[in-house]
Amino acid sequence: MCPLAGLTDDEDIKLMLKGSLLWKIKSPRRAKERLYRLQEDGMTIWFERRFRHARSKQIFSVMHIEGVREGYQSEGLRKYGASFPERHCFTIVFKGKRKNLDLAARGEEDARHWVQGLTKLIARVDPARTRCRALSLPGLTWIHDMLRRADKNKDNKMCFREIKNVLRMINVDMNDIYAYKLFKECDRSGDERLEEREVEEFCRRLLRRPELEEIFGRYSGEDCVLSAEELREFLRDQGEEASPRQARAIIHAYELNEKAKQQDLMMLDGFMMYLLSADGDILNQEHTKVHQDMSQPLCHYFISSSHNTYLTDNQIGGTSSTEAYIRAFMKGCRCVELDCWEGSNGEPIIYHGHTLTSKILFRDVIESIRDYAFKQSPYPVILSLENHCGLEQQATMARHMKAILGDMLLTQPLEGQDPKDLPSPEHVTPIPPQYTPVWPPCDPFPSQYTPAQPGMIPSPPQSTLVQPQYDPCPSQYDHCPPPVHPSMTCVPPVYPSLAPV
Image (cartoon, rainbow, N blue to C red; front, side, top):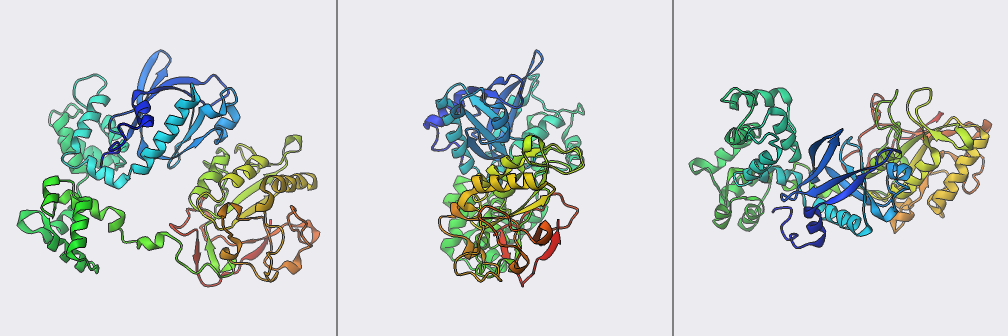
């Protein structure tokens, strides 16, 4: 299905196809106005960039966008967007390490069209499915279209760098050495540039999967097509039972060739699409949701945790950002670290102490935690505070947590809970999830603590902060990737150690 199928008459998409002048906001200096436009393929955003007096046309893919936020919902817009009305502003959040794109439209209506339009396109794009379609026989017309747009000198040829950029737009990454070897083999003229047919050959050779072709040939026989019965035989050999009706449903869902689909036949491209889809995944799709017993004490679970959460780069001179907390939460992280140090004007800051990393306000981090902690998961969040502040700024930290988090902050044992035992994730998770408590550092053995006052962090004797710490991730990683799902996985009991900070 084309990403624009059924959306061609949509008002949001119409405006995006026409294009809008948007300001890019990334510093205190004057924002830069550029033309942004959705391409007809429904997957690519084109914009014009200026270098001194030269113009450069750039593109990025809808498949690389993680989400869109309205208003001042990014660190960049909160810092530098004050000269634009909040309702004119929005942020495009990319997957991976690519920085956010903060934009402001000329009017509220334009901003709303872009936010709504991008949200619709993101919901309709399946990267694996789009990749297979784009590189199937009918889909290669898309490659030719991209060739014409990327061909800067209009000689109908592409160099290796241009081809690599185009393929990354359809979520195809590659090993540069292997890809360049194939590029040279397809370059029959020897001029380091490929013509249209050579580009097509290069794409086919790059995306070949000989092991899948072998499996397909084993079951399809000499005619090189799979019937519904042959597909059933393949599924039975994989330990899956499928009725003739289920086999035909798979063919109709994944086959790209309409004539083959009408005859209940599956060709190689459709077979590869099926194997690379969620339906063909080795992971049981039921296990992408919480299916374990979540009624055990909290210390019976591995908890998806993050170390030096505030860093977006290396821990010597990298950038600290509230965005790093947002990304951790959106990946299901349930334990984040805040390294708290004395700041100016009585405001605690967070950074990697005694290094060149940048600094962010403790207050801004707590606000991000309030806004994003439970967007992806309803289970409780543990705030691991590494406290290097004096008593005065510790009191400021406590005030900020109480004022910003309010009732979300768990400061007393839950009703009916034995104070000697940790509650279960299920017990701490009420409905609706937006009221789920955030956990400040606490001790599973309350007898070692002085009584906690509402809004204050429990403290052990001699004012030495003690917290339960259990980090299943190797210490060499700055950011521990969370498990697939759920955020908490039931394991045999593991009791956290008490470690002074």
